[in-house]
Length: 302
Ligand SMILES: Nc1ncnc2c1ncn2[C@@H]1O[C@H](COP(=O)(O)OP(=O)(O)O)[C@@H](O)[C@H]1O
Ligand SMILES: [Mg+2]
Image 1: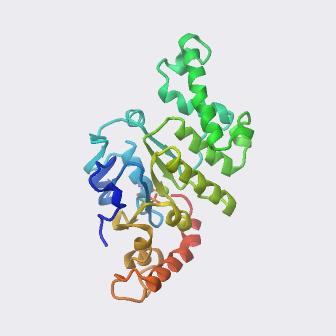
Image 2: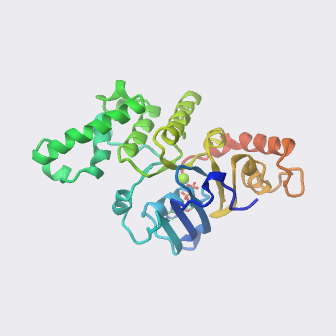
Image 3: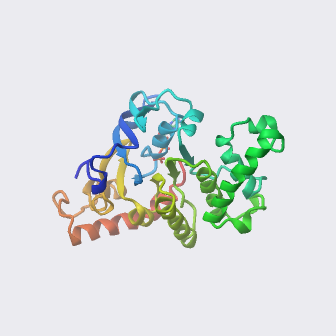
């Protein structure tokens, strides 16, 4: 299996994102090693891999925080390299972070209004929210914010400071803050990390709603294999900065290199290359990856 598998209806469409032969190094450590992939409009594209594999770094390259030493990244055909993060946000790329990054003392509503400010034409912070044009804009933008509050079922938390709310709700507010930007591309960095089963199921449902109701293209980094396998249209697997596999979830799951990356090289995956994607091989892969989820998650945020 190689890098070209993707859902059939993408054939012939222009990619939204191209990540082309990208290499990123930190003082000798190669965090991303010549990685390429393409993401198509409407896709839910997942990136998985053990801790330290380069997943967050990939997001940091797309959003302009890190600067690759080689390669090319484009969005809607436009070169992103060299653009500062705020310019990339304005092109329509929003993200959530591996750790919650909200204004803790601001309410849900105000955290979302801050997120929306990317669309404000007057300088929201300088003019103040209640003055002149800024105020008229604020009223208009508030409508969109209310829609997202509704979409994410945040109504009962709207006037509470973020820091008083359960972790799962804070992560949802963070998702909301990204959505109020009306992004064309959403980067989700471990949205289910640290969540219990019920919260994880909630998050999975909202991610699916973002795809199906809002039609927003998403790149999902997630350790919870159940979430990835249920939701993703396509999965790329990183290990030590290299892309070791890409394909549909079922293909990736049974790929021997992937199983090896998650379990360690000593594991006998029972086969000569795992080309058989059939029942037994696929189940073996599923069990193997599922079994390691705890270990991987326990490794903590990196
Ligand atoms: N700012 C940085 N400075 C030095 N090393 C970094 C930096 N960011 C990431 N790394 C290293 O790059 C590798 C990939 O990290 P990261 O992309 O965060 O992995 P992942 O998100 O897959 O767990 C790790 O070895 C990490 O320590
Ligand atoms: Mg990470």
